[in-house]
Amino acid sequence: MTTQEKQNSSVMGTYGRFPVVLDSGSGENCTDENGKSYIDFGSGIGTSSLGYCNEAWTEAVCTQAKKLQHTSNLYYTKVQADYAEALCNKTGYSKVFFCNSGAESNECAIKLARKYSFDKYGKGRHNIITLVNSFHGRTMCTLSATGQDVFHNYFFPFIEGFRYAVANDIEDMKSKIDDTVCAVMMEYVQGEGGVNALDKEFVDAVYEICAEKDILVITDEVQTGVGRTGTFLAGEQFGHKADVVTLAKGIAGGLPMGACLANEKCENVLDKGSHGSTFGGNPVCCAAAQAVLDTVTGAGFLDEVNKKAVYIREKLAAIDGVKSVSGLGLMIGIELENMTALDVANAALEKGLLVLTAKTKVRLLPPLTITYDEIDKGLAILANIIK
Ligand SMILES: *Cc1c(COP(=O)(O)O)cnc(C)c1O
Image 1 (cartoon, helix red, strand yellow):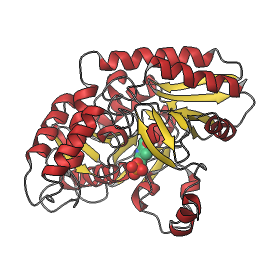
Image 2 (cartoon, protein in one colour):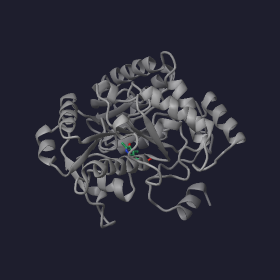
Image 3 (cartoon, helix red, strand yellow):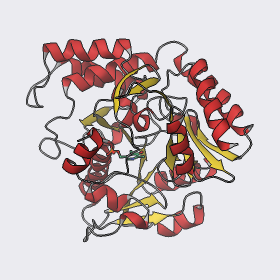
Image 4 (cartoon, protein in one colour):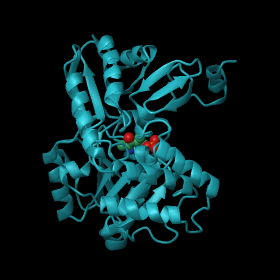
């Protein structure tokens, strides 16, 4: 049996996988079981933010794995304490809850928002507004929060208390807000929904309405966070600081980790016994996340990310067959004139380039450490396919 046959016969068929068995990686490149090499413009859906097996990252992970791999949250560890302090300092948040995925970090934010409101106002103020076309995860609660009908099948009953407002439509947002709403949750750039950035005016209006009514703003920065868009949090570019921010994907460079950050107003809402996670803040994941944080906040690193983003975007826009380029920083959506995104992704795989799709667009989430040389090589492959 081939690896593909074996995996298909033993793993539930929930994914549409590309027909390739990846075996190893280094920097921006990975190699399949036949020795064929690929430039990776997807970095594991934006998780391997420092590329494959980055030296500082690998060293941090291996050192911690050999020292203490897990303790549970019944005990303290220095590596979790150090990382939590560094993350809060960097982002300007008061406290963090650690979990293991994007969906879990959003679950935490939703629980926090409902309890904040319950503690202060009592029952009945539990509704949360999310945006049409959003994506917040695959658990029952985050599926309910996701503003796309295709995710609201089969698994009834879903979790009550979510309303969906049209992105960038201030009037629609206003019409959804009343005294039963405790939070608005949004992605600054909708990733899975098609790499669409919100308008600044819309974001400004949301913050203004929410501030008036003591409604919490939750920003789902699971995909946009940790340098992906050119600033540590995408919110910095919109000039806003949400009450609660969720992170995952690139936070630990490819190990499972999620984080839910809260400002002073909400830092003590989730108190003893109200939330928890066996693996959350695992020492190896914290060591990995610390290596990512140190790298991404290093001198000049994010300037380079921004330069590369401009470079890629200019080159993409000049390719025949590219209709438009969307997103922010190194979170890139490509709208095509004549081809489907999946056809491009399949053709790219053939030619040794991994890309992602998001709805009708080709999506690129290259490692933040990608070199100009690899960018040029990857874009040459893409240009050939799209032309
Ligand atoms: C990927 C993603 C999630 C879900 O993350 P998981 O780690 O798969 O649970 C949630 N929100 C956004 C914005 C995402 O991009």
